[in-house]
Length: 519
Image (cartoon, rainbow, N blue to C red; front, side, top):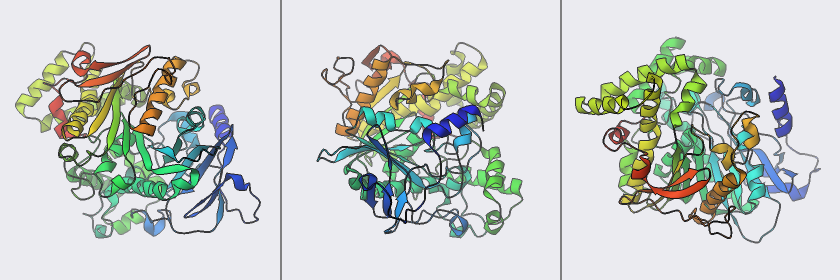
């Protein structure tokens, strides 16, 4: 293990939670839940409860590719000191990967709360991590929520895990024996729903208000939280949604899912579910590299609608309020993390696929857009793909939601370009950027967090001068199809601006691409 990973391991305290049978524990740090009493750890008056299972049985053995098993009553007392195992995944984050102790038994959540008695139930943020639906986890130091809760003790934060990649989003029902696995294509979302059910039934014991829950996430986590409101019965569990750089575009069709499954089956030499069940997790994950960035929730017409945007436009989510946005130059991140050669090959293949879906008129519009981009071919690709994946989907979802009678607060983050660059500010972890990384102005970062917290508390992210860290009121207008105002997060000038002035989306040449989704 590298020196950096050793330091992070020591800092965030990884280990294995055990049952406490001798009665020796601090009862002031214990919380009685439906499925057990969990004992946390307190630091600087913040109590963290880590590695709490939110299912009755972990999805291993005969439960691989099965829907999550609901948590059951348990009178036991358990440590909640350490993160649970992360979902099985390929290496993705460099040195930080060494912190991801993996296993199919991965369905756990973490809770942070201030150690104080206010007499009032606190609003709750439930965070869903990103990672392209095939990487990441609650173990990431970025999602250690001590700092944000210490600064804002009036909220409780929960971070949840879910199955990833070939274990969470793998179509199986068309295979021999696959009729026993009707849910495999959307298990990751089902896991998230089970975690939300656990929060709904247990968060009051931590001092949280089950009727004031906001679900938030970034990238694949944001894509997830824009899909969860479309699942039957989900509105019981949350009233607000906070997606950062992720939208319903991050989905695939049944046909695309089956194509991925068949490719992987051929690579593994498997012909049926019984063959597939004999393959160990490590081999499955390694083989799934061949279909990387092609696994995501499936628009199956059952668990998810065939057209999520249409469902929004018809008012399926009009009772939920949104705070959502994206970054300037989102796609610059991908050549950096993939390497330019791999990125160029991947993006070229995807471009051919996308262009093949378009009409001749639509292809001409796309090529016209690309020709106007200054720079090398990689620059053209990045600007087009961020229109397809981020900018246009953000504006379309804002339009669909508000035209259906719902509410949306929309933002565009320009302080630092690139996918996920806002997260160190949101979770107050600028130290993770390292000596050469970007450090935001502290007042700016704190103001952004205050606006997020106001949304979690009230459903409106506006801040008055008396609570704004920079002493200036910030009135965040609702998005509306006529004025199309968004809040622009320039580092030294947070202000509302018309989308037409910022030109977030090319209405004539890229907006229509949202109908083609991700792949």
